[in-house]
Image (cartoon, rainbow, N blue to C red; front, side, top):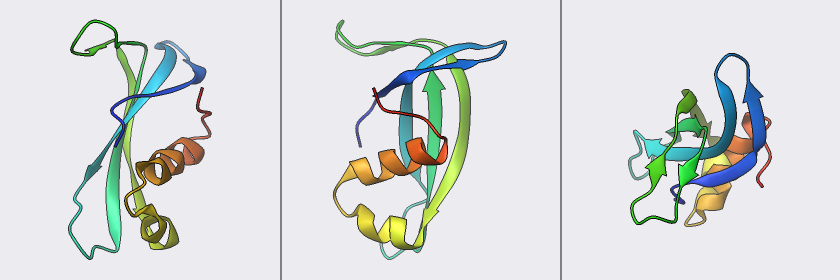
Length: 93
């Protein structure tokens, strides 16, 4: 899965402006009927200096992807990324 996805900036009151989201699949086994997707919204990520340098984490949580969404995932990680972004009402930049 893509390590960082740039999103349209979102203001999170008292925390800052989120510009990136990162998503990790957790608790996933072959034949599973659901997968936990842990997401984090980051203030910034510096990608041009070797190893990525993450800015401040503004929000994080876990979403469960199941049923048709999980079945359509296959090898295309954009399905999972789009699922999280759409569920959170965010927009890719």
